[in-house]
Length: 283
Ligand code: NAP
Image (cartoon, rainbow, N blue to C red):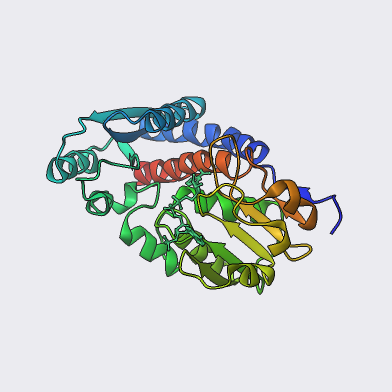
């Protein structure tokens, strides 16, 4: 391919979407007579989690949503955490609930995710949300996968009939993005740590989605000429999961790191919270 690969600019797109969300929030506030709240539960004081929670709080402020941080001690039990989630489920001001990942090891994270009311599960972490999204029914998809599909669609990347290879199968990223690509009629392969001969599988992909969590794991010589590269990886030093320095020139389009998938995640979280708030205002 040429070196003129299209940069799929998530930062620019996210800014455009946010501007529109601001107007939608103003309308909801007018209709409902109160400011919708996005509640974020954080357990313990993991510095990266604190940074993420603060970023989400700032994003809420930019578009006019209220944010509520529910800080819980590291020692909390699964039962007590589920009780906190139930309180937020029952709070009419709260339109969206996030449980910041990761939680301490002794907590049953899946049980806590599944305790979030489906209509407030704006990060799509609930098994019921995943099921609904997988089946093409109403429910919120996980934010990063939503952002990936959105960026592909906004840039007009054809998906139907294309060979998509997703590397990674996590609950929040690999699995849901594969389901969303299937909904768009791509032919989807999901690779993981037990996959045999990954380079050969990636070589047939028109669309490669890397969500492995290993810096520059996907090599340029695995990439078919003209493939579209989505790099969801975010490793120390602003490095993604694809060796973009060498692979980008073989691609027809790619998401840069940073400035590709990352900004779309918070933006989709905001958009899904606004959707939940609109539904709440109508109810
Ligand atoms: P994760 O839960 O650790 O999952 C990693 C996946 O990669 C697993 O499914 C694993 O397979 C697979 N894998 C590991 N080694 C492999 C190998 N050698 N070959 C093929 N597959 C392999 O990670 P995650 O939460 O999905 O995150 C992945 C990356 O995305 C990280 O860099 C993270 O920072 C980034 N991320 C970015 C955003 C964003 O907003 N931009 C959001 C979330 C995550 P097994 O299932 O077999 O173990």
